Length: 368
Image (cartoon, rainbow, N blue to C red):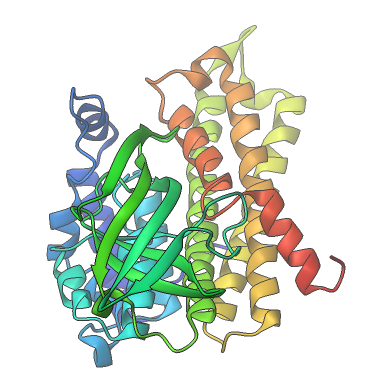
């Protein structure tokens, strides 16, 4: 099953625009220069992406955009994946966009234009769906936040945080400026060259209006995370296709003992397994996108988790096999294959761990 979510002329135009954009602004060489600079530029594509209208296409017309469907998100994830952008496309306009839309927050307008980069600071361990431990204390006319949100992906470039906090055994979301007094960040470089930050809250005072008016906060967070997991499944399937293409090209060019590597039967079998894995990942990514269009239910959640697990398994196999076939070059910075492998490894721990996703699936299926 080809990984193609272009179901309309608009989607085809968008996919073509993204291909041209990636070739012009995020070639492997230009990406390497930006991220290997003394001060890595992890927002170099942000303004151009906003000017393309990508962020607006992730928001419904009722909220000021012109899209907002799972297919819109999937086309963009697929189109951008192979060029390995480190900008918070999925984390900000997709995940936080869902939450801000649910709260009818005015900040969503700035997200659409690229002027604001809110990041969800929620997970405090391996389970992304666990309740927050960071505490919020209601005081006269405001709230006080205290605690830690560790390793928040893209926390280094955030302008705002959507912070989940426990208040009287209930979970709430607070919109907090990244410059709020008492909020400190310890930045981290991740395996795929993106940034993150340990975000500390020590007596951070926010006004009462900072608490987002979401009727059922837990459900809204779960919905946003499932959009994120679906986006990662699509990205994984697209990366598998890219790593396979690079590997198969190499097997066709490289010679040993006077023959192309592609002529050795054992390597043909490995290539065939990689191709089968790509088809499986594409099929599961398509399923996740289709199920995301449905109302939130345990069945929808289970289907998205299955897709996430299946894509991860296929991605891990493709990356490990590609690196084995390339040999020592497969882990060198000079080859994009190694960067595909690192990104696939990072996805495994993005939005919680794979073990936590498997445990949640077992619980939803009544086996936990």
